[in-house]
Image (tube, rainbow, N blue to C red; front, side, top):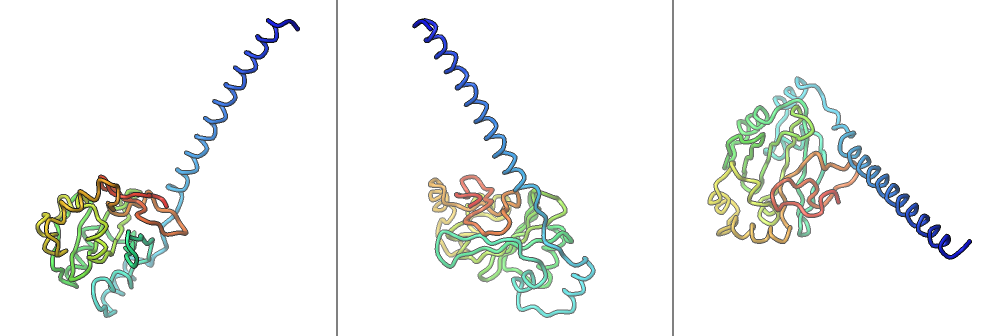
Length: 225
């Protein structure tokens, strides 16, 4: 083979290698995308008794407080760890009650210190040292997520944007006992260290994660950890 023919063969070989590389990378990226969609969309929520059974349980049992009421009645779905040690939010789930109905049941049984309006599929009840958030699942309008977080967890982790349309910032300043809490948290959120609330679309069965499923602007580093 002469020199010119050898150069053409090398060029042809290089083109083939480049084409094969592109096809391989495209195939891999599609495979990873399919895997991620499968992890998000194929899991099922925990089993529950019928609505009537749950209603009877609510009526016939005694509960210490709203937190005990939720944790004793509904299955635990997940846990979210905060930035600091010993900080954790717990997420419960029900397919038997909507956000409005369930939040009204809880607030009637255990009067909250503060109660938000219902806004964008979400409602929050604030007790002495606990925030209880009722939120419609992104996966299904028939599923309600119930998140229980201590005021310490909220103070040190939440994005103030989570409470847009629910509470005025001065109310949160008062409840969390921090002057200009919203302003200070927004500054912290610039570094990506805020939690924007749990999202069932990011749920990963079998392990709890740090700030998994944050949905607020600037909220939620390390989603899916």
